[in-house]
Amino acid sequence: MIIVLSPEATKEQIKHIKDKLESVGLTPHLSKGVERTIIGAIGDEAVLRSVPLEAFPGVEKVLPILKPFKLASREFKNQGSKIKVKDVVFGGEEVVVMAGPCAVENKPVLLEIAKTVKKAGAKVLRGGAFKPRTSPYSFQGLGEEGLKYLRQVGDEVKMPVITEIMDPRDVELVARYADIFQIGARNMQNFTLLKEVGACKKPVVLKRGMMSTLKELLMSAEYILSGGNYEVILCERGIRTFEDATRNTFDVSAMPVIKQLSHLPIIADPSHATGKWGLVEAVALGATAAGADGLLIEVHPRPEEALSDGAQSLLPENFIHLMEEVKKVARAVGRMV
Ligand code: PEP
Ligand code: MN
Image 1 (cartoon, rainbow, N blue to C red):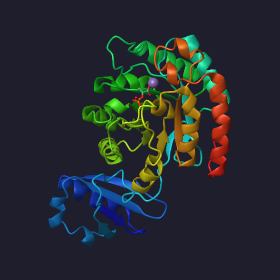
Image 2: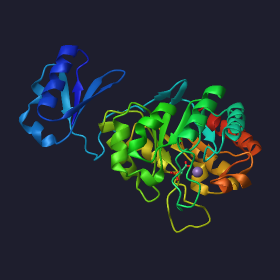
Image 3: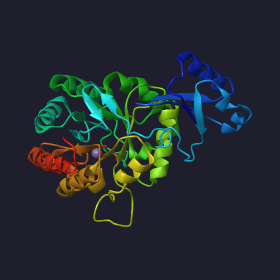
Image 4: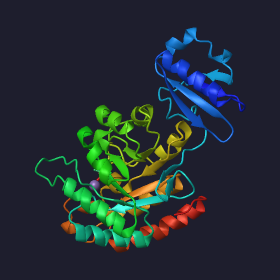
């Protein structure tokens, strides 16, 4: 249910409404828009049948949210959300580029990559310390040691850092080092993990599961939002189809579809979508043209030596070229990089 407050609603009236919602077992979520403040009443709405919310002072109207995802929906919030991470804003005019290695391998290589991607215009440094590998025999990531290198290098080059979290028990640990949590495709429906990061006030990039619909992606975002963490950025990283020319099939329509359904920013990961470095730039340009609010790109100075995802990692010179091209497309669609 959405409770639209009248512009004159006082703080006391808002508190009175919130208290009432809580007393019947619902969770109120306040959203302050430019013109209006609204309260999302989330929970079992059946309990509201006996509460005449329209009669409460300060209430202008009460509307149902028809979509199964409530706080993530455009019905709840009709303007795109802006998510700020240090000086970087997702969902604004800028197409925010996040780049770095698939995995943090050691400090010198990470520093080398960080300097390169920063110089080329990337705003956030990526690097996995906990890697979700298909094989238990593949490199699993450096764990906390990797988180330390990521933080140190991020501070050295003055870039916020993003890293994947796989285990709900690691939320506190990862939160100590990272500016943005990444929830990977394989964990999009790890509901325990979603609830844990929902209870943490830190931005989250939530990747679409490789076999998930956009509705399921939004339902997973709803888990985080309903926990009180409103800083969710969605990520299209390709889905499984019968096509085997690419690692996954990039769903470019995810960008406009999400913008129709949700106020949350949506970014694209052309690296995991294609699995091939030679295809990354073209897909990055397509995503930018379709309205992506950001890009997540894997870069490695010696891809043949990379401990994971070397085949899709861009050499520095190719990343620099991609950035130049992305800038042109961004400008053409009224954005900037
Ligand atoms: C990654 O970003 O390195 C990763 C594992 O991505 P995904 O979860 O999209 O496969
Ligand atoms: Mn990877």
